Image (cartoon, rainbow, N blue to C red):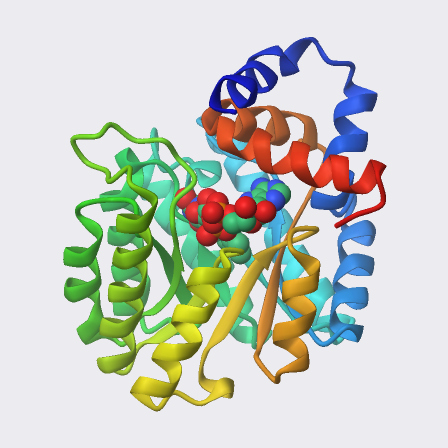
Length: 304
Ligand SMILES: Cc1cc2nc3c(=O)[nH]c(=O)nc-3n(C[C@H](O)[C@H](O)[C@H](O)COP(=O)(O)OP(=O)(O)OC[C@H]3O[C@@H](n4cnc5c(N)ncnc54)[C@H](O)[C@@H]3O)c2cc1C
């Protein structure tokens, strides 16, 4: 199966854009802000809130990074103006983190301050391992500046992450816990799926025990079960924590959790760069190709 996943991922660049668009359809809200807000409205009606991701990453042109920040600020105004229940997710590499870290920090501060004024939350997505220290530095700086409507993401596949959890816990950090989508060298990452799950639940438990907020982002039934068990064990009420899923993925499990009274936030990517985003994610992590193929067969043959 791994060979098939890799084959799909590497041959994707020669697949016509229209086919990639069809495949990516359920996972991306569309190209425009209007498409994105319409998707959020539907999710709100289903009982989920959202976090909007304006597609774009790895930008080293300061003018382009400023434009992204401006679009995020406009997006936050539109979300608030339409009364929708959504925050935003930002990749700091889109704000120039790799080449102009000072600019990335300043632009992130502008976006988070605009969100605070609109009573909205900003999540700093976590990218590959080379950006973690710089991302956490920006987060700490924003908190020192008095901005509390901001949270981070920590990846349970990395050997360092439990130390990051411990170091951040005194700040009463709001963490989206994920397995991690980037395939990292074995020197710094675990490979065994059960180890990655165990570390995920160990992180969630530590965060609960230290009064931090957890957003458990996963479609893995074992982890969903594990997190609900930890909520019981640690006395965490349903309204104090949330699950998160990607748009278009495991929608039945999403609906079951909402039906059982859990808070659910859906990650909604949108923007003109949907093609680059789709190809990049599949090339970075061929396992995603396997998930997408499985779901696609379900669509074609009427299962989900
Ligand atoms: C809301 C959200 C935000 C995230 N933010 C980040 C981030 O900032 N940084 C980061 O490194 N990673 C991020 N991720 C990705 C995460 O790290 C994992 O790669 C991803 O969630 C898959 O892991 P899983 O826990 O769902 O378990 P898996 O075992 O990978 O998946 C469980 C099942 O879910 C389904 N599934 C999972 N992914 C897909 C998919 N793409 N398409 C179709 N079906 C799928 C499959 O049926 C699969 O068997 C995020 C994930 C979510 C849900």
